Image (cartoon, rainbow, N blue to C red; front, side):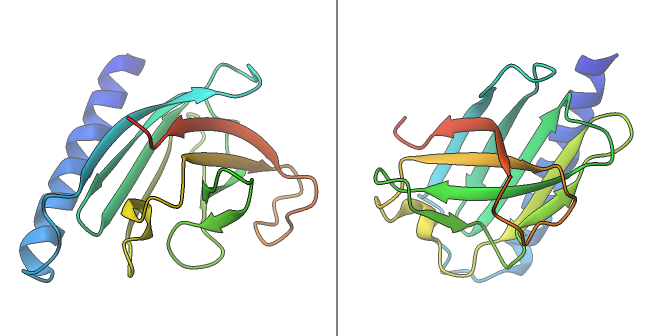
Length: 145
């Protein structure tokens, strides 16, 4: 059942990205395409997920997150500096089922700049996505594929 939910989520995301791409700038860099898996950082509930970036469209889906908890999405440089994906507060709330998704248009397409080496999803136990103190890395994936 979870596999079917994940497949349905991926289909919805792809349809959403395709629809938005048709309406968005024709000069978007269609050659810029990334797809990679997100793996659990600390084994907490063994979450997993994926990221799909097509031009300026960024989509993330995850399973087995803590239900109704707050998460943020960050790109990370090799020196550890973090830059949020999209517009502040870069957050989403996991559904009661533990599923989460984050779909945005990236205004500057930084993910393809070569400055960043991974994407990390952080959990905010205090439910405040603007508080960086105490946020915990839950999922991560490499941009160097």
